[in-house]
Length: 478
Image (cartoon, rainbow, N blue to C red; front, side):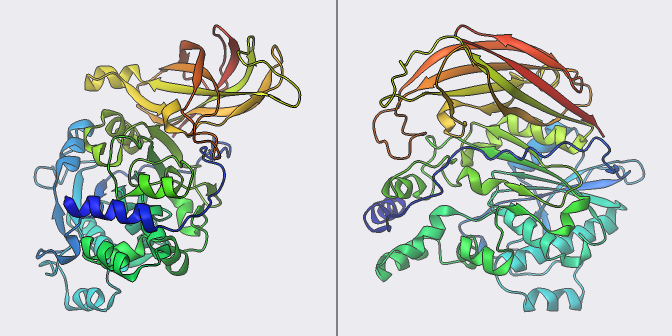
């Protein structure tokens, strides 16, 4: 633990200063939902969990390509009701949940000499891990008789999965063997903190940091530059043709305050601006911002949790369960808002406009009754720093902006969602103004709690203390 604090101090003093993209808000992909989706559910699938980075993983004395069980797979089975590889009925099953261990130095018994040669000749780190996952996938499909697989990946496991798909390892993508891919708190585009290590001038400090991480190859391969050079120069884009037959889902975590992370908070402070993150990952690095090839635009849920607490989040597992079922896709949009009262006086040349954001929580009544929790399945909250800012120059004039409130799958039995929307007039907030370092300031403009029926094309008028607006519902059954 003492080394962690040393690294944070070193980063604080020696990380090079730099800018950023200047816009921290979520770039929602607003491509129309495909109402005539050709997606077909396979009769037998296997859901494979690909875990994230382990500090001692690269040096672990273990069998790679072996099954892997942990708290995540246990909770996923509890939520979905799906069996494990140890207790499923081979003649009568539709899906099961199993994890894969990609770390290790010993080959599994199912490997052929050619498999061993493939692994030994692969590049250490992400390419090797991805090949291990691909070979495990083919083995499990053959063992169970499943025709397709679903991948659920967490953290670095998502970068491994991305490599496996875009490099078409074991021809899984080109043979259309991957039905769904759900990534949670993904290292998808890379990791900001590790990428900035290269800007440290001191060789001693770089060596100290690398020694803390044991200088494993995957630490270098989570950097933006490596991904650009070895996977794709378009980190943000879902552009590979191999995605066109895969249903993709994304979960981004937004709580940066409850995790020490890997010095990320300190690096962001040195760089002079806040970027939404979960303590380890910038939110922007956890999802595809551009979509060019897809069977259906990827779903995207935000949950206000930190990187290391994912196993404790009922919201995350409820979202994964609904995604694996993949029967009912819902998008809820705040179409327009009219502000009735502005707290900030608009003065030409001084305060040209009032800055307003709209936060919301989404609740599933069916999830609440099925899993006995609050039913909260998505959060786009003020403290995340991800909300788009809307500038109002006058009151009582509607402003159209089509802000997404919820965009994901729900349980097939779900016919209604509950949504709470709250407006805030903000002033010099550190999480929204990149040049401001004063204490955050916000004033509530009132909230609306409403239930909406999941009917495609339905619209709802909502009224709060200081504002009113309209909500639109889109719904696709698959």
